[in-house]
Image (cartoon, rainbow, N blue to C red):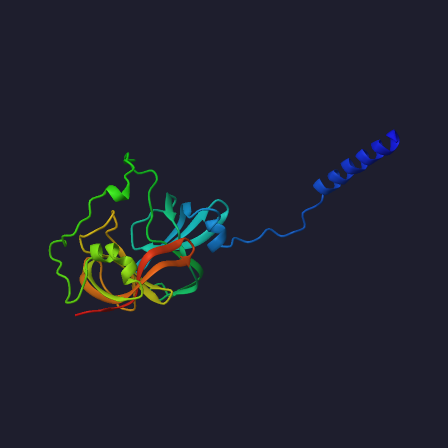
Length: 241
């Protein structure tokens, strides 16, 4: 019985050694851009390897660990060799940049970069519900006929789901030609619980700092994947004159 037990233990040990020494003939999986870069978090720390400036975007060849991929941010000054962080990223495959006359196999559109080496400031954690609402429109902004403010939008969002609204405000960000749409960020000076900005999709072209009125459909809890989730989004908006 003792010999059988010793033989069994020896067999198990030999088997474990064989498994551990098994040669790895599998090819390493190539970088999966969208999901591999995303991994278990939407936060990324990258080093810039190359910079290409177009009219609306700055394209960056970035590295994150052993991965290398292209990202695009609204046109901004970026330095090669420097490290930045960003959140999320919406992947576009076979994306053609008409400005650069180049088609990217894959490029992630990112709303902005953060310089982690910039002078850090200590911020207090504030409960959004304790932030006083702002109901007064910013100077120079007058709602279009039948329009509502961002305060109105956020405070009655559940009742407005699926309905058409008109918003007037200043364009603070414009990201064209993503998923066959232009992405507009609008602010009017009003807010609720700290929310003072609304994202709008449209085929219309606008300029940053321009005051516009847009009419679109209210959509709640929109998940576009790749870390882009919107509690509230205005879709298919058109300009109102």
